Image (cartoon, rainbow, N blue to C red; front, side):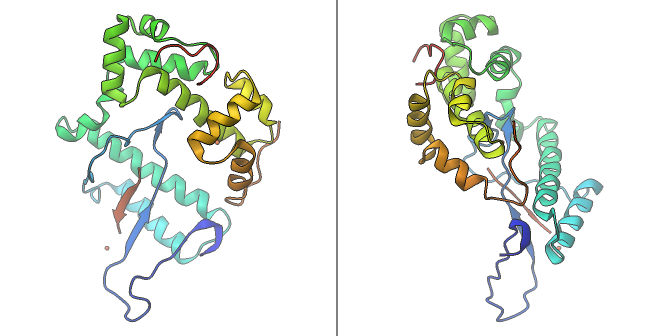
Length: 240
């Protein structure tokens, strides 16, 4: 383990210097903090990005941070990887071929309108009917299109969004758990804790302790990988 969260692994166990060096990283790729862009991937997505000067500069900096890690290395490495990921997504979306189908769920403005509404007010009571109305679609057509695009029902998305945002607040703030629960639309702390434990394998307080110890920055008071080679119906105000 190196400083600031970086990990080094030598597959040769120092037996030989090796001839190929690879940088691997996992970054969180979400759409407005809710669902993963790569959740539906069933295999690797490969694109040669070495011709882009921004990508080359980013990986030069990543190598430099690997060699001489310092204060803020973890945050800088994450930012550089996300920069490369954005450029990768741009290339896929402009490709017009099968690769861009991975992101087809972002292209339908009707579904995007419903997603924005959930993200704008995650605590608001939701039903399939009112989200279908926001999308300007019939209930059945909306439910089918949403499930096809995102591999989950609209109400599953509402629940996942609330729990995801709650997890970010637990990790990044000192807000009381009951305040976070209420702000995400849960009718009680106990209800929130049960739902959170089912989704994350631990209760909110344990999650906060585990995740606020990661990295060098203290919590604020009152948040599929990418690899590159270098040389149900309603929820009445609560998730169920």
